[in-house]
Image: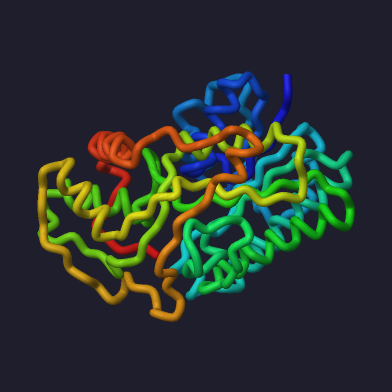
Amino acid sequence: MKKILITGGAGFIGSNLTKLFLKKNYFVTVFDKYNFQNNWGWLEEIKDNKKLTVKLGDIRDFDLIDKLVKKNDEVIHLAALIGIPYSYESPLAYIKTNIEGTYNILESCRKNNNKNVIITSTSEVYGSSEFEPMSEDHPTKSQSPYAASKKSADELSLSYHRSFNSKVKIIRPFNTFGPKQSARAVIPNIIFQLLNKKIKYVKLGNIYPRRDYTYVNDLCDAYFKILNLKKYGEIFNVATAINYSIEDIYNKISKIVKIRKKIKIENIRKRKSSSEVVSLRGDYSKIKLYTNWEPTTQFEKGLKETIKWVKKNPQVFKDTYNI
């Protein structure tokens, strides 16, 4: 039975990925950020699973990472600071976590018998589209410190493959959505604001940027297929080749829940114009060619599943803007 280390495995994507690999009969070790409550995030509901081990710590701690990598056969690296607005406040935190953390994974995999590893990128490294759909050959242009830190981590990962023949693959998801996603993300945020009877207006920032949204289960399937692909030093987009504006999403959710409220634009929620990525729409033909992966969940179906989850878990949301 294979053993896999998933960093950032207690979060939105990571917890769904952890459950998938447990179903695939892996022994899964999850590494996530230390907290004094010893909280396992979204893994609390499956904490009694005998095939699951959770270790809490700091992704910048090489010694701890090295001990965990050594005990596992494969690695999926998701641990990162991901909020774009907070990267304006603390760029250095993103450099230390996203670049140094990735180095720790790469170096440990290299020294421990060249482990098979997936590094998680982001479509934000492309910046506003110059052509669509955007293939892996699209130029990269970092428009936020977050994007710059992830682009740097990608380059470091590819350099390890070229320099040390490391078994590195990069997965580059476009936007992901689904149950258990934080209210910092626009889809659960809109759902919560529409469903909450105490909220009179749906507060948003820029409503015209367009993004390509993949349902979380489809993304997890892509991780699994890429992990088992013996093709290294490659980047794989995960996308749907369809994009929607924030306004489009508001209208779709409003129609499903049959609630309509006025939109109130708040400047605090807006990105600076030169930093705003106007449009992203991904080309997933490469991953389809090599693994036969393609999205299977229609956007509206994914929205309905996410709405069901938000309705069942209103306690995890607050009517405050959190960067």
